[in-house]
Image (spheres, rainbow, N blue to C red):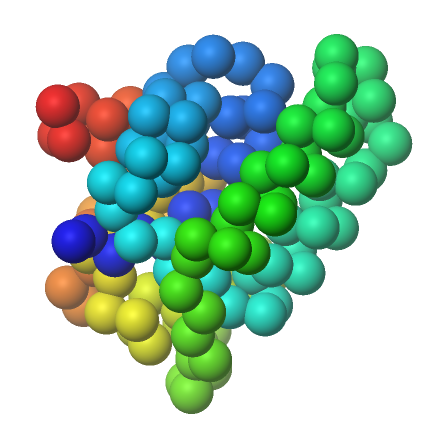
Amino acid sequence: MQKIVIDTNVIVSALIQRSYPFRIINDLFLENKFQLCISDELMAEYYEVLSRPKFAKFHDFFTRAEVLLVNIEMKSKKYVPTIKLDLISDADDNMILELADECLADYVITGNTTDFTFPSYKLTKIITPKEYWESFQ
C-alpha cells in the first residue's frame, strides 16, 4: 500500500471544492486505498488551519473539517520524524519532508508549487493533487 503525506493546502481544498483533492480524500483515503502518514506537528497544523475563521463562509466547513480530522486521526499512521531539514524557504513546510523521510513516503501531495519546486525528495515523489489522481487512475 502506498504511503502518502498530504500537505495542509490539499486538505483545505478537499473541504472547499469537489476537485482532485476532494476525490483523493473521499474516494481514496476514506476507502483505505493508501496509507496516510501524519506526525504530531502536521496534525497540529491541520487543526490550526482548519479552524481559521475565514473558512466560515463555506457551507458546513467546520463540521466537515471536524469529521475529516477524526477520520485522519483514526485511519492514519503516525510517525515521529527524527531529522530536521532546512530545504524549503517556508520553514513550516520542511516538516512535510521530514515526515516523508521518516515514513519513507511514496508521495507528498501538495498544491504548493511555489515552495515545493523540486520533483522529489530522496525516493518520495512530490506531486500535485491532479497528478496523483491521474496516476492513480
